[in-house]
Image (tube, rainbow, N blue to C red; front, side):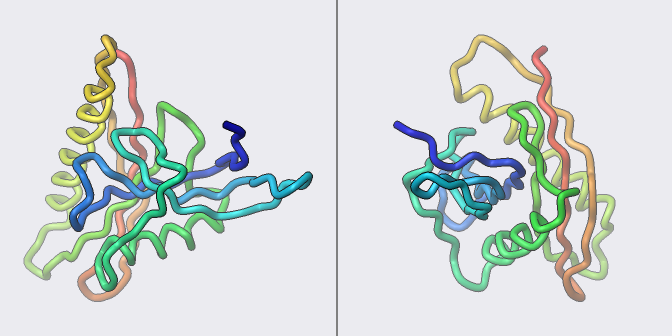
Length: 160
């Protein structure tokens, strides 16, 4: 099959709302071949266990943090400082409602644990004899409104 889309920068978002385990939205900016010319395009695709499902259209429930995260990631990709193009490193965006009594550092720590577990689980699902170590580091934090925060992480994977 001919690949017509070449992702140059991508941001991943863990999918919730009934999607299978280890599902992510991939929001990508890149080049897509239309006829004989390449055009700059932005694409939203699904990733299941680390594999892009290019022929499946993503869906996210209206009014959810998933929907809001996807639209925010589309805005972030307009800037060249956000997104990656690597098999061993990716930017991951997570939105959370944070109450006034919640400690932001505790929220970030919990997300780091979740992303670490998800990343290792994705690599283990490939039945590859290679085991990995995941390093998850906060990259940026955005206050979207009184109680909603967007946390951008860099997730690096290293063979162990």
